[in-house]
Image 1 (tube, rainbow, N blue to C red):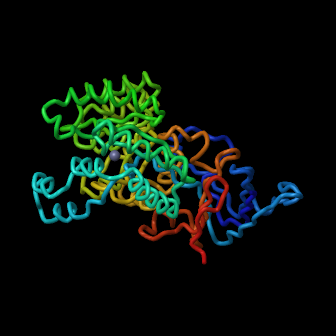
Image 2 (image 1 turned 90 degrees about the horizontal axis):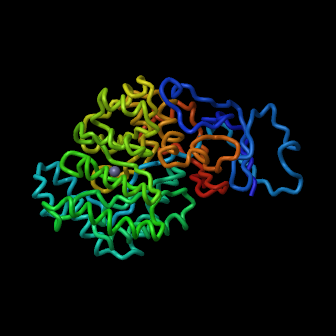
Image 3 (image 1 turned 90 degrees about the vertical axis):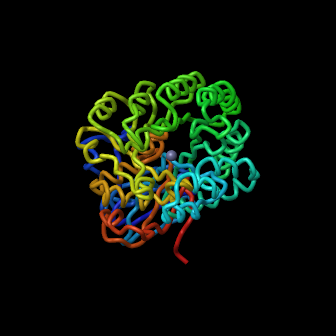
Length: 422
Ligand SMILES: [Zn+2]
């Protein structure tokens, strides 16, 4: 299938020379083409340019079956890349959220069925098929909102059997969904109740029982640890990252959400692909990140939902760092995978320019998933994951008009997979 999109009001985030990621001042510098065309052939971005220079006899083969889409008044963006989610889960947790509003304590909430440990209990009970169906619905929703690639974590299993169940579901989703998906093994998400007071023993189990099976079945692309105050220690984290390296699994870890925990430095030390959350990031953490290839990744949805302090994104970019932003889609602290909202949060709450916000949710998140060579921008040869907006005035309108769906037509792997038009 060949698709020619013509009369594009603005073709956003084009690259002549694709980069791995963009950092510091360069994040404010975004290439776009006004009055443009985009050619997609065999699932890839074949070519693009200005309408006035388009010679169809030049770019199209005579025998080709070409679908022509008219994008008059509309913009075309590279699909969002969501590099941090927990979207395979057995049940939503809205009652717990209301209990929190009512001021119930953590213990009361846990007694009434809230918290990670209760999700873990439900995970043990749910069938693999039911888990798959629920997750597929969530994937279809994020596709309609403009996401083209997503990382999904395990971590609600907390037993070998349940962790493998989650990862097998992610493997099936990888095969069946048009999204580009990467799996992250998060056995060390929380200490299960039966291991209370025996955290090191649980870490031993993650390393010597879970990891080998995950690796043998080829179920994960990355390994993750919740490294923070009250969760896993630096020592636990380093042991797991080191063990992951032996199986060729690079780290992508939860760090510095609750304290200056040293998690960022531990991630950098083991060359983690990303460190995520980062509410507690000071000069020492920025210094460590500047000397690394680790992508600092902020999760605005969780900070917003929990009413936490916001990570110092502006300070990080001004210091010369790259910044990525992902949804953290999960039932406890970020029950939304809407990357249009994350883009808006980037500008509204974190004071990023629209250009910086776009890099943070596309190219830089693609790097944080190890896929920026094939996704995250409009570049020749990359996978054709793009969306066409509804008629909107400008690129700046995308973060500005928060809360409404601006995406009209979604193309993944060079196929139209969703459209809002009747
Ligand atoms: Zn998370």
